[in-house]
Image (cartoon, rainbow, N blue to C red; front, side):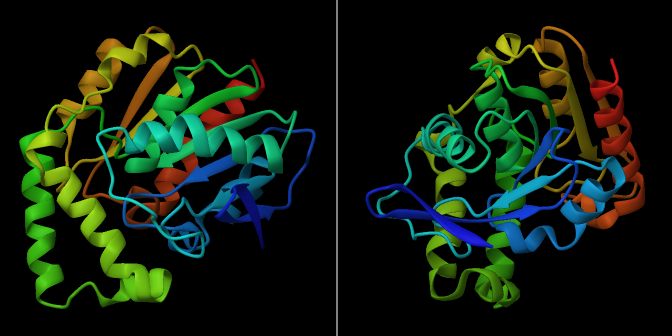
Length: 257
């Protein structure tokens, strides 16, 4: 476990997972209210299954990284994907091949980054990713606001401490704001040239088949989807065995072709 300074006053917390360093790293990008700790043991299990080393980290504002310095804009996911992530990879695993494994916001960030066609990127796995704002997403966040107001999300304090309310409001307010309603990254999907695995819980309250279909329709080549039955927004926790198999099979297929 360590911290690395990306900019003058911005430090990112990260952790490396042991594996065969001749194989690609698995880089895990957490969800909108998440951090590295909220992956629990899933990264270690996937790295063990594939013999790959891993990298997990807290995006700025989350977990043990530096707090948010300014309000979010419609470009906040692009900033994570085009500024923060490339700097982190260049400093922590320079010249190493890697896969991106992104959950929710982390999946969207992975797609944005992938559209830049970085030469060391081997493939992308998204889980509950969004490529546009839909009514189901907004409705799901509004329902989560009720739980927040009732004090039923106190578990987040374990991971974000005294910045919990800030990170919650940054997520909730942004996605429900009229100025964010036009956010859409479908235009960049044809630019991605690495293989893609799209995983979606069949009962995800924040989005579903419309997001998956949009990704598959716009993606230029070599993409497949796995819809996980009886599963919500976090398939890697709710259907761990199934998702481990889907992801490890995908990584094996890509690395052996």
